[in-house]
Length: 363
Ligand code: ADP
Ligand code: MG
Figure 1 (tube, rainbow, N blue to C red):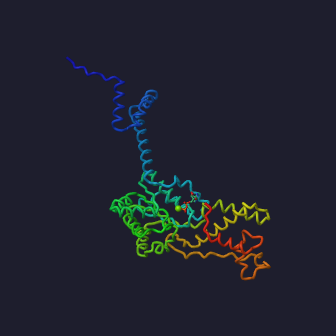
Figure 2 (cartoon, rainbow, N blue to C red):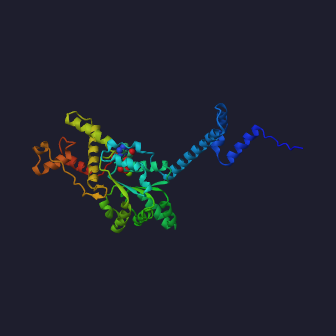
Figure 3 (spheres, rainbow, N blue to C red):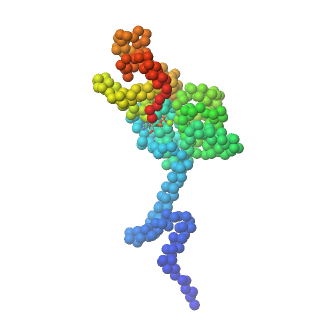
C-alpha cells in the first residue's frame, strides 16, 4: 500500500511563506510578496530572478533604516551636504582640497581635519557636510561642540561614569568637535578634550572647527602643556584648512550697506529708516572687523602674526572741515564718514559714543 503525502494547497503554501518571512523579521519582503509573485507570473521571471527581486526590497529597506539610525546617532545640527557649499562665495577655500576630503580617504588613515577661521565663513557647514558624507558611506559619526563635550565629561566624572564617557567618545569612526574657542572651557574641560583626542589618536578621525589660530591655543586653553600635547596629536596626521574670507551670514547686510552707500554718494535722499539701518550695519561691520583683526590666520601649520586693523585716512572733506582742529579731523571722519550729522552737538556725540561702545549684532 503506497502512502500518500497530503499535497499542500497553493494558498496554504503562500501563507506559510509569508509567516516564514515575518518570523525572520523580513517585514518588507513579506509586505511586497504578493506584488513580486504577480510580477513573476506576468513577466515570466525565473525562480532566481524572483527571489533576487524579493530580497533586494528587504536589503534596500534595511539600508535605509540603518542610514536613518546612523543619522539620528550623529546628531548633525543641519542637513548640509557638500553640494550646498558655495565655493564662489568663499574663494579662499581650496575646492580641490575640500573635494579630496569629501572622498573620505582621511578616515582610512585615521587622519584629522582642522577648520580654522573667523565666524560665518562656513567651518561648521564643511564639517557637517563631511560628517554627513561619512554617515552615508556607512560610518559611525558623532557631532558635538567643544563646550558640550566638556560639560558631558565633567558630569560623567561627577557621576562616576568617566570611563563610559571616554568609551563613548572613542567609539565613532569620525568625531566632529565644533566651536573650539568660542566659549571658555571649564576647569577640567581642556584635560577632558585632551583625553578624548589622545585616545582617538591614530585610531579614528576627528574634525575640529575653531576660531582660535593654532599659535594662540596655549592662551585659549590657559595651559600651554595641554595645548601643545593636544596639537601634537591632532596635527601629526592632519589637514588644516584656514578660511580667511568674509562672513557668509553678513553677505546680505554688506550688499545692502553698499547699495545705500552708493545712494548717499549719488546724493539720493535716504528715509530715516534707511539711514538708521545704514548706521547699524556700519557699527556691526566695525565689530566684525575688530574680530577678524584679532585672529591669527593659520594655513597648513604655518602661522602668521595677527593683521593690524588699518585706520582709514581722513577724507578730503574731513581734512578741509573748517570748524575742526587738525588733530581731530581723522577722528571726526571715522566717526561720521557713513552717517554725517547735520550739526555734531555735544549731546549727539555722547549718544553716538554710547551706542558704538555696545556690541550690536544684526542677526
Ligand atoms: P562658521 O562655522 O564658520 O561660523 P557656518 O558654517 O555656521 O560658519 O556658516 C554660517 C552660515 O552661512 C550657515 O547658514 C551656512 O549655511 C552659511 N554659509 C557659510 N558659508 C557658506 C558658503 N560658502 N556657501 C553657502 N552657505 C554658506
Ligand atoms: Mg560654526
